[in-house]
Amino acid sequence: MKINEILTERKYDPSSEKKLTKAQVARNKLMSKLPKYATFKGPNAANWDKESNLEAQAMDAAGKSPEEIWAATGNWKYNGFWTQEIFGGNRATFKDGPHDGTLGSQLDYEELYKAYPAMRNYQYNRDSEQSDSSGDFQTLMTRPTADNPSGQTGEINVSKFNKPSRKMKVTGHEGQHAVSDREGWPGGGSPHSPRTKALANKLGVTPYEAYRMHSDEILANVVLNRWDMTDAERKAIMPDASGTSHIITRDPDAIRVTSPANGGKPYGSFSKITPNMHKKGRDNWDVFPKPGAAEPDVPGTIYGRDANSKRYDGKKDGDVVWPLKKTK
Image (cartoon, rainbow, N blue to C red; front, side):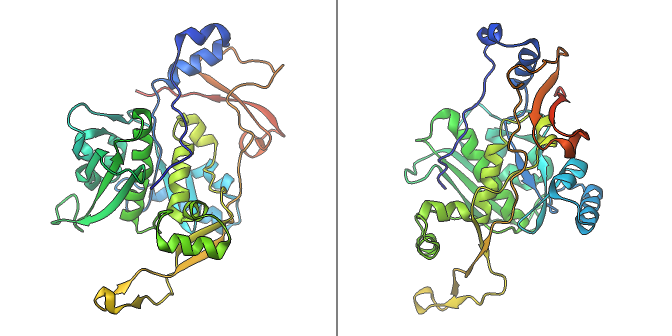
């Protein structure tokens, strides 16, 4: 699937220290060592936090806002299903050696494999020949094993035509599709498919806009938007899935149709189009102080501001200082 809005990786540049405050320099040093990935797991994950999810469900039933639930439990309800974010641990990096084989042999992402051990053995090629998209994910089946009783597996391909700095983020995008597939969540799409083009015509938008409305494309793009966040930022800022007017998903009540051209087997599925009701959260977040604001001189902190921060720090608005946790 194509990814047009890729964020550039932030790297620590020692030469920039002269222009930064002590707090900003301390933050940048730590940022260079922090995780460079973000993935949302579901109840099928081996390390799903059931206790926090039960608390989240209780808060949801009591009418608490999604932001309050995220702040208290780290659970986020997206498009009707509960998620938790994978973060912490080692930074996701490519391993040396051949660029095709298994995900585990090429990608150092232990936090993902703790959640989904079977994904370590997914087929993975970060130098694929495809030129019509940045990458793709396909579901496959194999012989059941102890780590993968269902036999469900998959294949992630990343085009060799991507810039080296982009390949990791394409991997993250397609990796979210792989996780969603294991959870049985609604899938993504392609701007080139006849179905997407038909939906675009129905909605009066371009095929690319319709593609971005697919439920799992929205989620995979949330992953990219959170890619370079620190652990403290992830905990403070609720995921934002408000970027589209509608969400395209499967209609569980639809009757699939058959076609003689398809051997009489059902093909495709009817799509369900619903308004995107996800609210935009902390859109005024900034990790650096506003002009003229007092600067914290405590190393290892993040200085930020948020016009909506009253839900997080108990204050009416404005300037907050978040502790920046070091990672091993």
